[in-house]
Amino acid sequence: MSADEQVRPLTEPTGGTGGGRATAPADPPRREVLRLTLALWSVALAFGVVTLARSQAVGIPLRDPDGRMFLGRMQSAFTLLLVLVLVDAAVRAWWSERSLRGLVGGFVDSLRRRWTVRRTFLAVSGLVAYHVVYVCYRNLKSWDAFNRDRDQALHDLDRTLFLGHDPAALLHDLLGTGHAATVLAFFYESFVYVVVAAVVGTIALLPRIKDAYVMLVTGTWVWILGVASYYLVPSLGPFATSPEDFARLPVTGVSTAQAEYLVDRAHLLADPAAPDAFASISAFASLHTAFTCAILLVALHLRLRWLSAVMSAYLFLVVLATIYFGMHFVVDDVAGVAIAVVAVLLARLTVHWPHLDDRGRTG
Image (cartoon, rainbow, N blue to C red; front, top):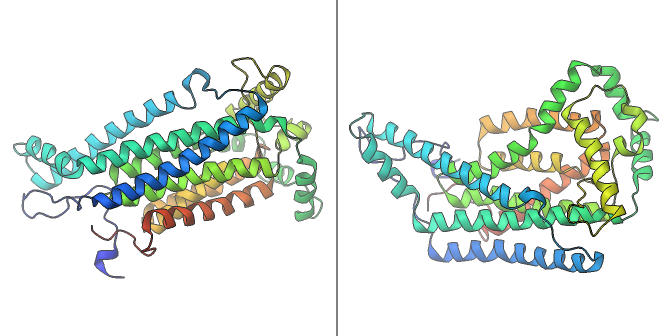
């Protein structure tokens, strides 16, 4: 593997020797900026049209309860982006200058060189498009409640795969129902923060915005393919269809959320016109598994070895948690991995076409 194929560390002094100014990665060409913008927004707008069509079919307008699905997430994402950009610039300035005297000038120079107009445009435009897709995904997921669930078929398939045994019960016997529940609940609930860190962190910290777009577009496709799988095989998950199998588990944030999911779903089905009627429960496929696996695959694609190792362990624990708490059937997790693979392939096709082997070359 040649040197120019290596992806630089997330924060580093690029170029310069002995206190010289850091040299930033080349600004993305105008044609590439246009291509990436059109590609991402074409997908986002097409998905928006599908969402509006479904909205008309069910007779329910798009909703953003308390701003949690769009406005709140956008605000959090851009706040995190700003913080990471400033920290990254400060670190790179210190590495470049190695003195307090030149730190301020190096900091400003680092920001100016890295955050060009084109990179900033791609970052802002990309995050907005990503969140448009996300709010559409959440609304489509909510309306999946009107489809007849197929949990029994998934339950039977799981038992067949495990020779008549219930995989969740096997985990309860193996790991116990005490401390294991607390630990696994922590990893399951941390997922939402990991997703934000992956999408925003790559945009803020990777030297090339093009590499960050691989993660951004991958995440976009995970939500789109994921909601398609919800409609392909509507389901609620083992905790909803066989609650007695999880009665031994202690109260955790996961179990509290499960109870809320069922209440919210019942409210939507009873009064779809209520402004606060919004469901958040669908099992097939597991997007906890899909998105986590997607982050791992992107890290492998970018040759970020330490992150790949961390995400491998995290993926293992997340999959365990989905089964342990009955959020998903085993087959849901398998489908989640398949979604991750397809999403990364589509992202690479979108971002690197026609040079599909481009992984961090300068320019």
